[in-house]
Amino acid sequence: MPAHAGTHLGRGLGWRTPQTADPLRWRILGLYEPDVAARVDIILAACPGDTSVGYCWTYPYVDIALHADPDQHTALTAEITQALDGHIVSTGHTGALQQLKALVPRPQLVLHDGLSLRQFAQALALPAPSGPRQDQDLTIRAAGQWRGGSPHEHSGLVTMRCGIITAQDTSHSYEMEQPNRGSEILDCAAEFIAWSTLRAFAASARG
Figure 1 (cartoon, one colour):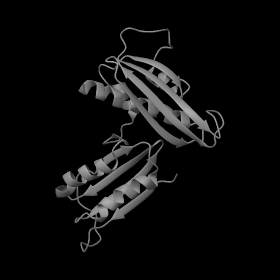
Figure 2 (cartoon, rainbow, N blue to C red):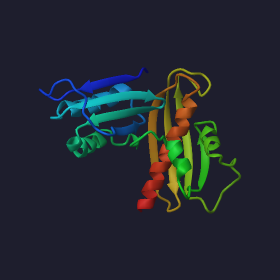
Figure 3 (cartoon, rainbow, N blue to C red):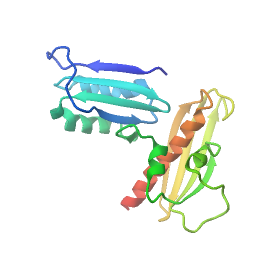
Figure 4 (cartoon, helix red, strand yellow):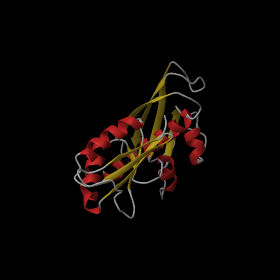
């Protein structure tokens, strides 16, 4: 999936790039780049000011960098956040695994991973499963439905699923479909499990 850059200019304002110190950024998971662009570009088409937007595919993420006049930031942030709800991993360059590693204190995890072949556990340096634990914050069950391929045969699609039970016995489930084009699919699986974990942990913290 090639990188794509798009630019939208406000009506009648000439060809110039908006002068902003820092672009607005989002890191997206679970949508293809053309789908992200379609959702964002329709918002920018209605924007009365100049905007310049770039889309970059950084597997498994799509990164958005949006330059806009400062007085448009609040409205654009709200609209784009709503349009991409459920797919925003961060408003910057950090991925889900990176965010999970940085959590202090990190939630205790019991992991049953039939999806990433322990790539998630290795990325977090988690110990191998050794039976039930009493102090866990989250119990994670990840699995994949491989259609036309497998973790080692790269073709077709995989539906990734992650179910999480918190220490308060609330359950959360997440799902994402991805093409199985190469060994990097396991990197994607590890990021998906991390993203699911972050969302469930945040929901648990909110009560």
